[in-house]
Length: 420
Image (cartoon, rainbow, N blue to C red; front, side, top):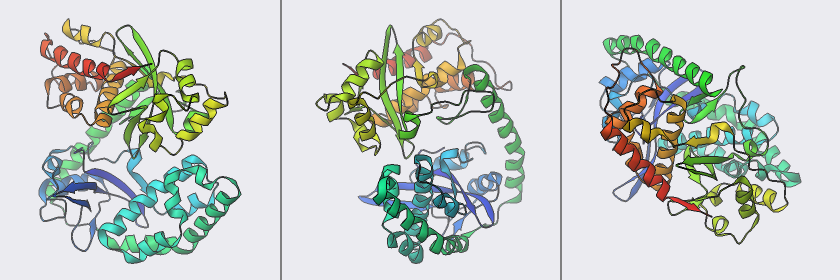
């Protein structure tokens, strides 16, 4: 997907619909945000094929002038399908607010309220803005579950729940009145519908292959599990939403921390350098020391749950066990490519590519994402291994150019590791 335009799914009174959202971006010194629509409505579709057909043929909508729009009409139905992180159940908000304020519930509520606030800001929904500004606890959702802990936190959660029970139906009604489905070219719609089952089958095959190989399925960096696979991280780390990760490169095995905030990776580090340690114990010792430079300067300080990690380390209750799903092995891939080996471990390669692009995004370095894009030879090769397709001709060695490009990306990553 174009990096600055995101497909989203909204659960409204009429059912689930899909549309496009452009998160805030800066242009000519001003900040902008937009949805697919016009001056009066946001355009939504009951099926992704309808969205695909529209963006491939229609003109005159609000996203047409977005800097990244030129890439959108070429996207497949699969690429226009919202991932789990961008599915927002507006109708289910009262039920969420009626439960206890655990971290998962608060995070889901925060994400849904955030997209509603974006709709209100972009579309001048004054009555919705009044609801969200009328109860201060809406703003506290961004701070996570600890904002609703203790006696005072319980009062804030009760106030929020009551505000939602009283006003949320009106919010949903307003959004219902905002959305509309425009006419779509019938030929483009039929073509997109024909593409959709193939995309679904490819996704299913990919998830199944990864589940068999790794014990879990991955979806754009967010890993879900089925009944027969491991459930992934649980306990403290799952609660705080921060993961210990292991980076294996060459003969070094190093550990650090990473989380995702608004779907963007954030590492234990600063200024594009990742603070890494030779063992889990060394990492915990550093986190227990408030004077340690890795603690004092880290970008992870923006995560509202990071103080919980530091406190657990200080009182001796922190265990930084790295799950298999968070182990990134770079060793051997470059050598195999240089030798023309195509039979690479798809899970290892997928995770390694994920790490490279995550670090690049966090550090503001576009090179990894560009090199691993399918439009480039390395990205095309990686995609063939990770997402095999019998209709595609297998690339033929030598992979000299691809091996060199991979080696440069790994060298760039290693240069960012600040070992303690």
